[in-house]
Length: 462
Ligand code: ATP
Ligand code: MG
Image 1 (cartoon, helix red, strand yellow):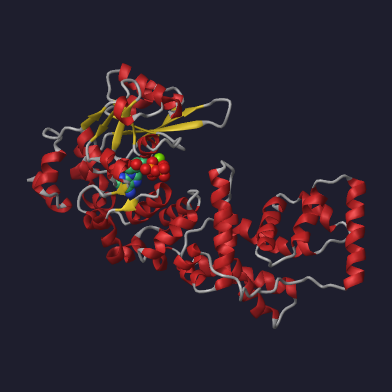
Image 2: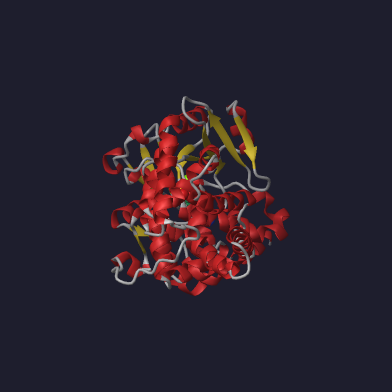
């Protein structure tokens, strides 16, 4: 009876039911000769975790995105381990470990090395019913016994075939339940199960499809892509904080530009980042944002850090400029800028779960733009000591790349920041002389119209 209810709630197809018990389902076993994973790309700590678990009699594999990346010859950015051991059993085996999460517990095992600490996320094989988190709350009691499952069930509840492979670094065998390896070869993102149903269960999977496609340059299989255009609005049901996290993942993936193209092509942008449509409709905004995201992608790909505050400061900069012009009709420049910043931030707050600390960073980056114009007296000395100077300078650099500010201004600040006292005095003197000569008044940035510049093919696509 109980099983019937559960089946009804989660609408398992007969095939899924058969698989769910894991008895009739055997993975494809792929040997090193075929998969050619380079063990040197595998985290020593992840190997250690699987080894300790296996020696204690449990099954343990590296799983998910790490296996996908290893098969593509990319060094994974983090490693997840899936095991038959329960969270309590895992925690007892590792000194520096802690259980996190309440209903669906996972264990974080931390390793301290020469570089920054590495966290290996260990999760117990989950049963199918685990995936529908939203549905579980009402009937949580019934499902409690069903929390953990077999490896076959665990594979079935994952999103895409390329994300559902298990790698044992000891035997160097990959277990593939859903044809992930063929999809890697065919360069294809394919949903496990019935795509519409899987998107309804968790609409974030639509964003994940786009992110992985941008990252791997794989095509999203037609059957997997098509329902996105129909179900895009379901994204609105995702809790704000989770949605914001996913947007950040897209923007900080090192493939932000490609991801935005994907959002637009599949009709998701109005629900995820309505701003994208506005950006696409305006040449100046498009040029600014595309340059910003390309710079960001290059930084991420070079292993450099980027900050969410900076990213959103670039996405919203032209909103600020527009609003600033409006307030300048009634207020002096500085208060007008602050009023514009307040308005833009609060309009975003209405739909995005942006954390306050990111907002504070954005506010600082934008308001420092005015101070970067003023190169007199003690101002520049104070500014280079400001913790946000670097971010504000990078922002100025971006503006100068787009012709919104003279490149000499950015170059001046770079010199000033890296000079000794005598050179700094000299630099300040030069500014004074130039200003007396030209009597220039470089205050608010003027919107630059790019009339004669040709769009690049990528811009045309967005
Ligand atoms: P990356 O870490 O490179 O962004 P990933 O595939 O490892 O990609 P994670 O969010 O770390 O993504 O998730 C780890 C694994 O958990 C995934 O590979 C997938 O198997 C599973 N998973 C994550 N999110 C979902 C989801 N929303 N639905 C189904 N399975 C998921
Ligand atoms: Mg991962």
